[in-house]
Image (cartoon, rainbow, N blue to C red; front, side, top):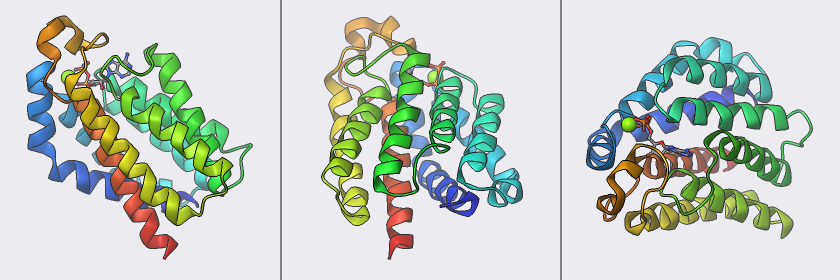
Length: 210
Ligand code: ADP
Ligand code: MG
């Protein structure tokens, strides 16, 4: 795990988000202002533009560069939230090993940073409804000494189930909360984009894991 791995994950997430542009745009048109996917793609394109810098670094510093770029380019509510995720992970990578247990802790630290920034947990119809259950399951798998292959197969399933569950939730945070009851019946765009990124990153890492 190093800057090259980080960049390979960014490439995978970018390709997957790009493929779902219309769908995510339409989700955010229904319960937000439609900009979510475009905010994200702008951020990802800024990361692609500093590929050489990211690839030259070790894992933590590579995430740090990505975090700073995301903060200055993504905007919206999700910019500072994804900054917190990457920055929280970068900080935790200093004290954790590059193995399943270490990555479970690194991811959990990133998600905790998002929770503190966004001041919300599960149930308010946001990306947290995907990130928190995935971090929790990751920690459980690490505690059971699960193989990397099992982790990479399981986490996308957890992400998908929990993304789908946002459909029936009432939004109580962010722009969608202004709609009250009318927010029900639509999947949260941030939950969908997070789930897509988790699925594509896990698939890419599973390839490398052979
Ligand atoms: P904006 O709502 O400012 O237009 P975006 O469209 O980029 O920002 O992002 C919207 C997404 O951000 C939502 O779908 C939701 O998942 C997420 N979000 C909004 N507020 C919060 C929060 N307080 N905590 C976590 N996620 C949030
Ligand atoms: Mg929006």
